[in-house]
Image 1 (cartoon, rainbow over the protein chains, first blue to last red):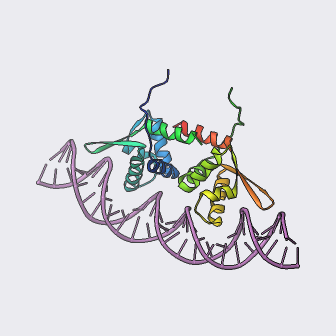
Image 2: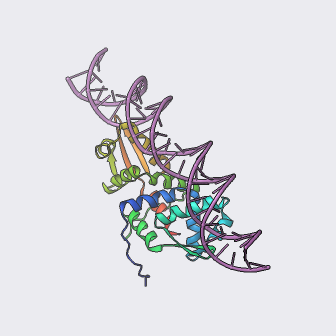
Image 3: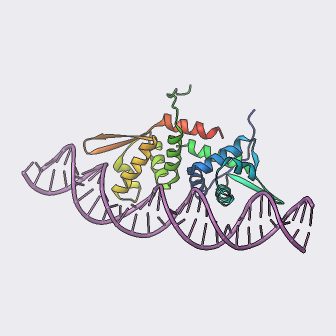
Amino acid sequence: MVAKAKQVRLTARQLERIARALADPRRYQILEQIGKCGGTLSCSAVRECQPVTAATLSHHMKELETAGLIRIAREGKFATLELDRAVWQAYLDHLKRI
Amino acid sequence: MVAKAKQVRLTARQLERIARALADPRRYQILEQIGKCGGTLSCSAVRECQPVTAATLSHHMKELETAGLIRIAREGKFATLELDRAVWQAYLDHLKRI
DNA sequence: TTGACGGTTAGACAAGTATCTAACTATCAA
DNA sequence: TTGATAGTTAGATACTTGTCTAACCGTCAA
């Protein structure tokens, strides 16, 4: 039995944003790390694996967020990143139609 | 019965090239057009649908080719573009693992 | 309250790139 | 052979973007 995810409809603009977000290897790695760690990850855990400044990481997080690929939950001093699997699946489905 | 495609192993560099190739909307449209027209398409057929000069189109074709996404067959004056479905499938499989 | 810590914002800079024009090569028909 | 046609290559230009530093904002413990 397959998990029933909420169907997501991506706009042309969002599809474009996602493609651009994935084009940077660093961003892809970040997304991969978030995805493979069960789905959520703290911001500083990501930083430990990426040799970039906090400012640069913050920039990449925003790109991934505006693309819709991740959600960012801010609590107190900390931020937690979560992969939006419905969006990810919708993107895969879109590519599959080629 | 599913068509049995040759298994393709993509290198990290090639994965990166593919992601970058897909990041440009124009290139994505070209790839889409090739893919949806049964798999092969003449170069000038693509040009009729894209408001760019021949030089620009040639540039995009080369990007798609070096990414491994398409093959270009040159015969006489003409060029024919063909989607490499094995590479495409391998890329989808890679993304699916996130 | 004050300092340390996690993260963001603004601005600068270097590298990459999508596009064009112009000049070129190669093929084919008249 | 000559002209037309399909596509390529080289170089220029304008725009995008990944990265940094520096300054900033909020939170929390001492």
